[in-house]
Image (cartoon, rainbow, N blue to C red; front, side, top):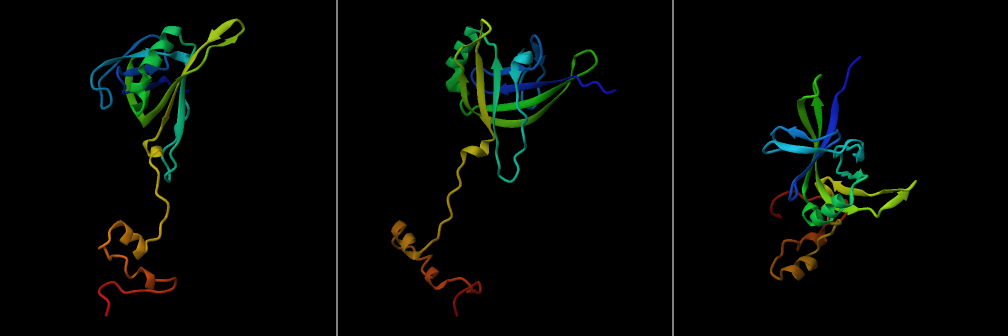
Length: 186
């Protein structure tokens, strides 16, 4: 039976850079196409909740929320201080593959996203324990761009924009079912 030794890694290119993975303890990550120099990833173990990320298909870009729960008051304070540098930062999500001795065999970067907002939840008490969480909302870069609505160009619209531009002067003669050969009018 196959044994899978993998962990999720998330790198947020903010100031300072945030690099966390879904394991225990700190992990020295080698330099590659995403990490310019060796960096230490902080272990978030089961505290890290990463959603399934879908590819960008037919212009449908997804939004996702990464959550780290059970954080200390010190970590929440740092998150609030760093929140302005996180907005619009590049977020790389990958998978670390380990060998039989739990050494890094490969790092495969799966998605490049863009950070939208960093939020800190209010402490919630459950069974006498206070739980805080930090959530990062990320999205494919395409979600911020809005497409202009369809428009119909008329000569009057263009003359309002530029009084001497007559490019749409023949639009009034075009209607459904008419065709016109390309080239000058004969």
